[in-house]
Image (tube, rainbow, N blue to C red; front, side, top):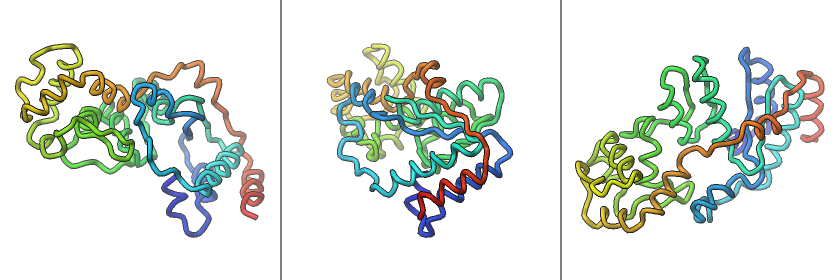
Length: 246
């Protein structure tokens, strides 16, 4: 939705989105970041998203306008305080994909590719694939190489060059061994000695990267409490948008 609002020069983004929801034959669930959604990850790694440029006020106004209009569509909306949308989406995808249902994630957030990796036959995502990073390796990639957009530095001295020198499977295995406390975790991977030493000396930081790149568990009762189901009424949805766009 942010991409829609940032690239929309016509001002019709929220209306087009609302009309798409009315036209869609499938169930539509819209998940929003909850208030203080980054707080739990910042408890794990204080630098998470710190210094990241915030959207301008127009984007937030667009979010609010769209949410109000969606109240008059069939869309289910979820906004859980203290959690990011990613975590709630992961819970929902795992719930429904495990039952064999097909899920389409309309997001360009690369983190969502982790769910494609978990359920390759049931989940598709609008995020653009990254070269040499299969969906099932997104978490280990971001742990080692980092994520500039979320201000996650990754392993010092490793970078994309050393990622390409290894295979995702080898790095996944090494990471799992490291997190399990195996002192010989680095056997079988290619990395300079100073990188291996940095990892050994910063075990808590590496674990923090791993934890925040993955999805946090969201209590089911909180999701239920903060779920609203829209009541389809095109006239009311249209009137809501006209009120905001006057």
